[in-house]
Image 1 (cartoon, protein in one colour):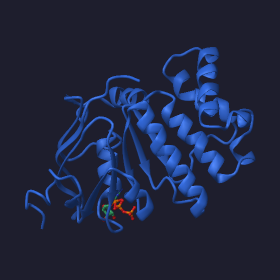
Image 2 (cartoon, helix red, strand yellow; image 1 turned 30 degrees about the horizontal axis):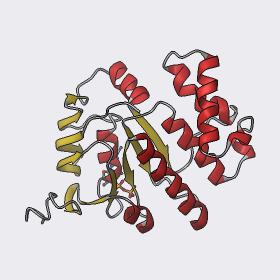
Image 3 (cartoon, protein in one colour; image 1 turned 180 degrees about the vertical axis):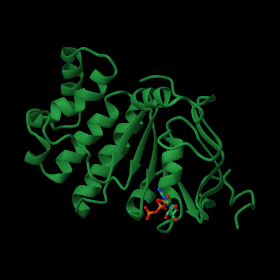
Length: 236
Ligand SMILES: Nc1ncnc2c1ncn2[C@@H]1O[C@H](COP(=O)(O)OP(=O)(O)OP(=O)(O)O)[C@@H](O)[C@H]1O
């Protein structure tokens, strides 16, 4: 586990033509906190996640990780940041179909310069840790949706990220499998000391997080943290 810093978005703005996707969002996520981003469709949840994760730069505002600005990096630096500090988990697992579970999990380490042998050993440890070591040689098409999402979780965690970003991680799973995946996700990030930022429409996911931030029309309208905008009387 590495020492991780606070993730902070400051006055984040993003426009698509006349659409205001982010209308000046301020959010500070302490290291190790689990945060659900909720709100109606089109409210700006994914745009916020993409801005915080250095996937898409905001039009204005700053993103800082551990105090360091990460929104104004070159594309190469941002891509390195995503490989070393951030883990990603999406609705559909995004695994490479032609690679085994082991190789899918080893890939981020190899992209970061680790030897194939070392990457494979670490990947195997992660699959074992998540209880799916026996699936190491299976390709994604040879697993259930829940198993594949667990492999995707191993791939997100293998780099020991500061923050795991998840967009509807249980959206493609049935309720029981989704609940199990959610539990594994939360347990894993807590044990590794990572923060979790999860965009979700699923009330079960939101309730399981320590903090729920509600977005509407590109602005935070509710924050369950005592120090959030609601407590300060700043909500609309
Ligand atoms: N690439 C894009 N081009 C144009 N408009 C976009 C683009 N991406 C997002 N938008 C618009 O920005 C607004 C916010 O979109 P965003 O995807 O962040 O919402 P969301 O809350 O994640 O929605 P959903 O819950 O449906 O995924 C929406 O009005 C959307 O149509």
